[in-house]
Length: 192
Image 1 (cartoon, rainbow, N blue to C red):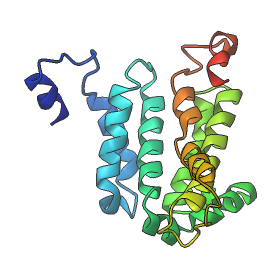
Image 2: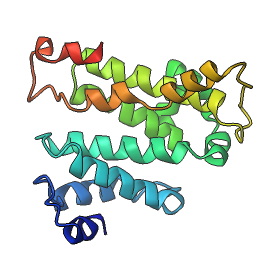
Image 3: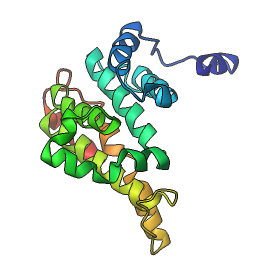
């Protein structure tokens, strides 16, 4: 649909094309998710993000991880799903290791975060994790429909919570896969 829209506007896509291998690998992972049908649109969002914004990433498995991450994080942006998943307690399950064993959206989130070390440097993997935790905290303080909502004391606080939920560091880190960029010094300045 997006490609057709761009074609009608006579705008040529950037050279990124549909990747059947990426889609097939994503399907293998998501087919066992008991909540897959509930977040199908988010899985498509993840696939589109991995195919377009990260088409330069040479490792298909890294792009699959980006797609999974995006699908889960956009699904958790829904206050009902955030609350029903118990996302306020994500930090605890990550710290005690219990989420890795869970068959749930938070278990899948913990596993994809853990897998980032397979594709990214320690610094980038840590930035992805930190950004992801900030996202969850931002959801708690920035979404009045969530049971975890904390009333913001000022407009600046609202801006702060919006900044937290953007996961900018994670998406910046996704650019620099360690197999293509083994020297962190070549890109570390983008994180400042």
